[in-house]
Structures are given as C-alpha cells and as structure tokens.
Length: 591
Image (tube, rainbow, N blue to C red; front, top):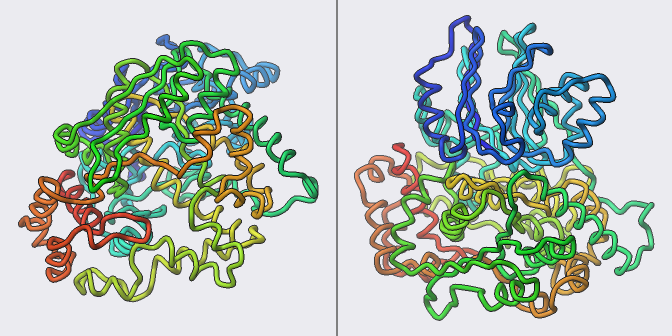
C-alpha cells in the first residue's frame, strides 16, 4: 500500500521535476516509509512507500528491472503473489526481492496485459517499457486502489489522489456539470471517468490501459461477471449455498492476512466485520487487534454500537480499542476529513473512518474491513422491492436518487443544469446491460461495480490512507463476488436481505449481532445539522467563493438553513450537508 504519481510526455519534452515533487509531497501520508523517483526520457514515475510486504530496500519503488527493461510504480497488494512467484520461477524468472511488486513486473513480462486476470488483490500500477516507450496502467476489479489522471494533448499526469494533481498545477478546475448532476442526484456517486472537476478523470476499475509513445491509447475491460443463475448450482439448498459462501469467505479472509506486519480489524459490531473477526479467530489468530468508534447522540439517535463490538471482542478475546469522539473533537476533525477526500463524499461516516484510522495507525499498519457485504449479498433496503419490479430503472431511482431531474431545476441555478436527465440515463444504461437476468441482479451489479467503487470503497481508501493505514476488504474478493452473483435473488433477500451471509455468520458469531436492526457508522450530529455545524455550512455556502460560483439557488439555501432536519433524502441524508459538503470540499482544495 502506497501512493504513486508521475508524468508521461508525448511531445518529446521532459516531465516537470517541480510538478512531480509537488505530487509526491501531496501523497506523502499514503507512504510515510520512503520515497523514490525514476525518470527516463519522457516518462517519470514516483512513489511514496508504506512498508507492508518485503520491508527491505530491495522492494523499494519505483522498481526497475534492467534485465526486462521495465519500471513500475505499484499501489496495493497481490494476495496470491507467492503462488504466482512459484509459477514464474518455474518459467525461468529470477527474483531479487521477496515482495509482490516484482511479481507484478515479471507477470506483466510473462503474460502481457492478461497478467491482471491472474491477480487476486487490490492494485493500481503503472509500468513503463524502456525499449518501446509504451506505458501501461491498470486498476483492480473494484477500484479499491485509485488512479486519477490529468490529461492534455501533450501529456498525462497520474496520481493516487486528485489533490496531488491539483498541487502539480495546469489543471482545469471548472466544475463538470454532468458530474454535478451525478453528485446531486446519484447520491454523490460520480462514476468514472468523470470527477467533479473537468480537468481530472479517473481510470475505471477492472481496466488496463495501454498508452503508446505518441499518446494513442487503448482500454481493455478485463472483468465483468454475469449476474445469472448457473446451471451448475441449480437446485442448491440454502444450507448448501451457505457452506459455499462460508468456505469462499474463509479463503478471502485468509488471503488478506498476507503481510510482514500485524493485521487488525475495524470492528463495527455488525455482521460483516464480526464474521471477519470470527473467521480469523477460527484460523488461530490470537490477540487480534480490533478497533471501534462511537459519537455523541443527537436528536435521540444513538451514536455508537459498542454493545455489539464489545460482545464480539469478548467472545473472541481480541485486543480491543474503543474510540469515543466528543462533539468538539468531531468538529475539529472535519477540515482534515475534507482535505483527505479525493472527491466530495457526502456520507457521514467519512469522519468516523478518518478518526478511527488516526487512532488505529498508532498501533498497526494493516486492517481488514467489512465494506462491500451489502452490495454483494443484497443487504440494502432497496433490493427487496425490486424482486417483482416491472421497471427496474424507475423503482431503483425512486429509492436511491437524492433528487429527480425536475427537482434539480428548483435547487440549482440555470447555468449549472444539464438538459438531459444524465444520471438517470447513466443508471438505466448500466441496469439494462446484458448479463443480469433479474432486476435484483441488475441492481446488485450496478451497486457493486459503480456505487460501491465511488462511495464506500473510495471513502475507506481515502480516510485510512490519510494516516498511512492499509485497509483490506475480503468481501470484495472477486472469487467470492463471482460466487455470490450466482445466488438466486429470492435466497439473497430472505431475512430482510443478506440471508445467505447471515446463515453463514450463524456458524461463526453470536446471533445477537445478526438478529438486530441494521447498523452503520452513526454520526447523528451531521445528519441533523445544527449549532456549530449549521454555522459552518452556512458560512461556506454564504462565502464570496460560493457566491461567485453561484451553483445553488438562494431561495433553496434559505429553505435549508431555516429547517435543516426537514430536508432529508430518501437514503436518510441531509440535503444541507450534501450541498454544504460540496462547497467546503471545493474551498478546502483551493477550487
């Protein structure tokens, strides 16, 4: 786990050392253990290191393999690298390090772009071919590791974070109106390649891009599993599906223990993180470090789930750490949280992950986390109504979208509107693609391949890496996800969703954490914007920068300021926090 950045020129000029240096400084929190830079003609690759596997200098990056003529910068972890290394050694490759970075280099040399099909893990990497001048960049199947791009006709700059590209300069920081439509409608999800600003794009997940020395590029999408019933699994009972899922999850959790440093768990006390702890205990992990966070209550809404995380910690004898965040500390931490966001992310639990990661990083460098289980196993409330849907696009938009296209015109000034219902059209295209034979399957595919990437997964990466902490997500093991995609929807949706996973969990963890109301990182002060939080949002939206941008209609803002708690989205988010967060993020990053 690290931070990567660099520049590729197509005009014969050399990359800018000053721009590279500014990007390296910006991504320094992602890699506090070392830094490196390699320049060769028109290509510069730079790296900030967080030492997890092969702690020696032999694994430093950028890694140059002079015999193969390849240089790489790599962010992530290939969990099956020992097996791949053995396979490559059998093909005659010799290794000078013991980590996974060199395995990626040799795998690319051996199998070309098809190497990504063999990787089990999370990754973003850029490889430069010395002899051809070609540059190859790739991102893992779920976009767990980010890769942002700032492109001009004569160059491409890339970085693990969007703010790093801003620091390098020469970026068009105009707001992208179509991305704004996504943000305000599709629950702050801005799918690739767009970001909220025009001058920065992102490589889509499950994509490998080949860039020729003249700037020509070609993308290959290497993973797109079907969401269909598989005849091979026809007639399986609930218990048989349960056992298949549990075995696959065991493997996923075990894979993510590969490290030369200790690995802990972010323990919310819900089913997802609890079963991870239980499976690690089952595999013989003793004294496992676990971490939970809680906040003050607001409007009678409880701000922690310690009773459940305590239960799991006691049951499995973990070395448990509870972090309670008083309101004043929450307020103090918001500027740092905004600064850590590569893109504006509206979910309240950003600050929860940020503060939790700050504490966890004092003890450990790697954690497992439960993100992705709801998107993979059908845990959200909008899936059951889709089971009998005759119009999956309408029914999905009704429960997920924060605003309709018509409502947008009442909230946003004319110059920022787009004529077409861009977000709905994007979602409709994804839902109606071939490969899903039920409305529920189509929604699970959309959420796991689009929403998950640019909301929960991005949130966890940004907030953990702000403190040099690596988060691994076993529920996004692609073997597990491919299996789950074949489960009949009616089996997934029993027990109010996540039926198969809940049945698997019953064999591992106490029923108290399973048979309860669904929880999350509750931060009620940000849901019911009041007091100093209201003042902070009002100040941002009333500032000169906001007035000059003139995105939101003043009558709409006045309505929100008057009664923030009366304006809650279908997904229980605050409209005021959403519009205020956008402005606070823009101002934080100098836009």
